[in-house]
Amino acid sequence: MKHRLLLSLMTCATLVGCALPGVGVPSAERAGSDVQAQQRAIQPWKDEVVYFAFLDRFNNGDRTNDFNVDRSNPTAYHGGDLQGLIDKLDYLADLGVTTLWISPVLDNDDDQLEKTGLWGYHGYWTKDFAKIDEHLGSLEKAKELTTKAHRKGMKVLLDVVCNQAGYAFPKQDPAYRGWFHAHGDIQNWDDPWWCENGSLFGLPDFAQEKPEVAKFLIDTYLGWAKTLDVDGFRIDALKHVPKSFWKQLNTSSHQARGAGFMTLGEILHGDPNVMASYQREGKFDSLFDFPLYYTLTDVFAKGASMRRLGDRFAQDALYPDASMLSPFLDNHDVPRFLSQAGGDVSKLKLALACVLTVRGMPTLYYGTEVALGGGAEPDNRRDMTFGANEAMRRYTQQLLTIRKGSTALRRGRQLEMWQDDQVYAYLRQAADDEAVVALNNDSHAQQRSIPLRAESTLKDGTVLVDRLTGERVTVSKGAIQVSLGGKQARIFCPEPGRRK
Ligand SMILES: [Ca+2]
Ligand SMILES: [Ca+2]
Ligand SMILES: [Ca+2]
Image 1: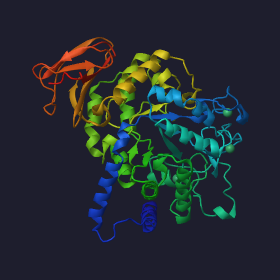
Image 2: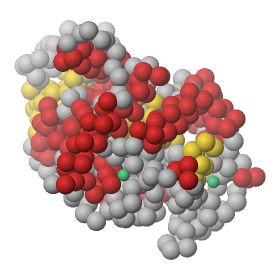
Image 3: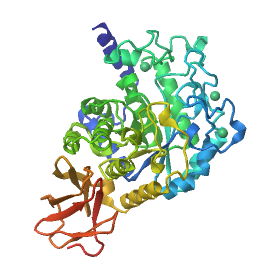
């Protein structure tokens, strides 16, 4: 109870300093129009496909910064760097991804932790918020990355870590007196107060309720956004920081960098109600779709009923805007999908077809395109192996090409067409374009007669082409006859010029 009161006082105190434009307009009306304007401004992000390049593990482009490197140790630095990513921009553009999320680039702890033997290779233990980490490269190299990515038409998201500093941060310095919570490690992970005010594994936990701390964090990252000219933030560890701070950060980001600047938050939570509260109150443009992630794993990796997909998408109405979520199959905090699927690439291919055709702005984890495996951390952060699976890379590229060529798949609303235990199908419908996706999660072939939605404008006689195989079906009596091989996806788009 004491904790709850304290938290609400903190929230009020933090909001006082958060000035909003539009003085003289009734506040509820102003807030509503602000939200709508913001939602309009970020719509183009639905065209993006995010690729998470985990810098230390992606590509080593500069051997001169390889200190403390031990590639045989999965928790040590492996030597990947900004130059390595720059060297692979053509590879990524050719693959078809459009936005890079780069793991944190600020100066991290250099030494091995005595207690655990772990290293700060991942970038989430910031030692100096004013410097680029010397393992990754220089300030000039970081600027070069965004400049060259932009030249290739790609956007860049900076990974923003506001919950904690690194173990080596000089927190004893009198300049930082009172900047960190002093409650020790999180005692109860089910208690929001503890999640926000306790430390993560002994890491110094910023007290964002102090205005000077909030100002430092916001000024720091807005400064980097300007210096590096990034297009948005990927924001770490939402549930460990009060929503009032996130609202400040996100509002300030849009004011400083424009309404089209993306704020994509990570809250590792399976409940859409909790997710929605962060999107709504924390003012995030987008969130990684963790609830859908759990469903995709259960259904495609572990063989649960496809009806679970229907149940999950039925919860979309809980969000302020589910179409701005970022669906994904895995990331650096969870086991890789392929490992969850027992190494079965046909399951990965089906799941990938789903994640790249459902609503939202999808995120791919590096290595998915070459069927990289890996269990729980740190095994899920293996070194990238370019060329390891050319068939998988071509398939990924094909899916991304199909997505790029279809307004419906990128921006259309999603309407369920069919669900049973084996097969799930949906319509993606934009103002002037439609696509039909059908997925068979069974290992045996399936046939279904799938009625079109009443909302569909596809008339009898319209020829639809499965963009994965080139096979055609014709709409007849308001339905399509769909044959699906085991673990097969079909992505039907109207044949150009043949639409009735
Ligand atoms: Ca290196
Ligand atoms: Ca360092
Ligand atoms: Ca915290």
